[in-house]
Length: 150
Image (tube, rainbow, N blue to C red; front, side):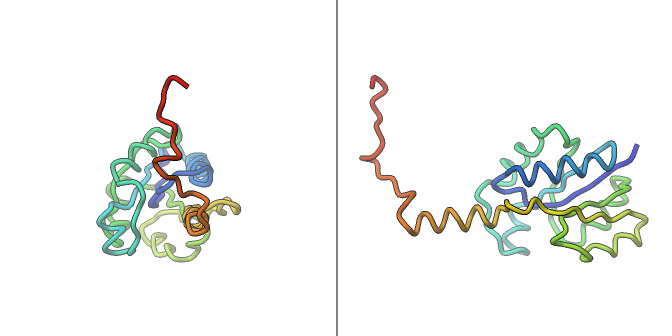
């Protein structure tokens, strides 16, 4: 059985994530997805997620290409994971090209897949913030019709 592993935050799950997971799964028989924990995201990456780790995990587990989801809690965990989970292929988006080549020393094939160009979580967050700043997404309680009979 060929095992593939990929890492990510997977916040605001979108079709670019699905494309990555589909292509990663096509490289093997068993796909492990390692999702950054809330603490790791905040303390090491200085990123705040919209969804909690448990919510992101539940979303990713529901994707048919994914066989196992585990937490990422440190940068140096990758070397351990390669051995613990008997990984054959490590996959990341090509925006990380070259950054994980050291894993070849662990006997793992390293593959950088092209990103889905027109979508990213960063772009979604930027667009939402821009819309909020422009007043496009501001809704008051008075704007919401709560009468179920209408």
